Image 1: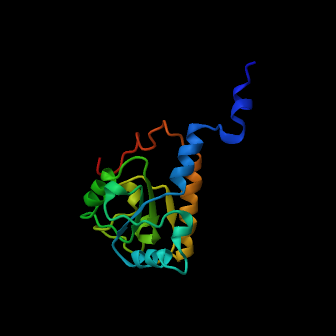
Image 2: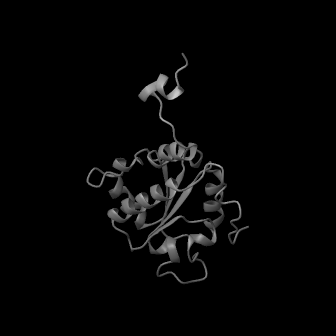
Image 3: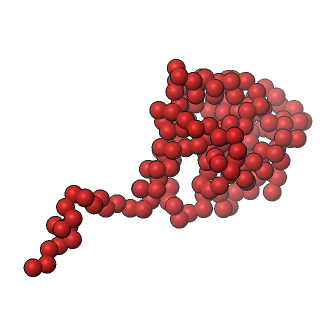
Length: 170
């Protein structure tokens, strides 16, 4: 007598979509890399410290190599001289990758509206989440991390997210 597959395996098998399984793993194991150039980088340190504890959200292992990171936090002012470096570091990160512009300077140039300051890193690399503030509070960093996790939930493993992106350096 042949039993159905479900009856034979019982509760030992879970069926789901590939996107859901892969995205579940990705969203709770982010490896951030901080591109810190100013005071916002200090605020990230506060978010990673024990009082705010970014590890609760699966982003505890801060990487110092772009080749080992999938989340870049750009913290601070970016000058046009730094722009090619930022672009190169972004390109060295493996796919999938996400970017957070942390603070007013990374998001829009901040108070530095002059000839040498990039008026938002979105002109160089694609940005997934913006954090406002000068500098932003650690809770805002945690909120941005939650937004990245929510974004990851809706992505497909088959789609190249940044295929069509063109920044000012392209």
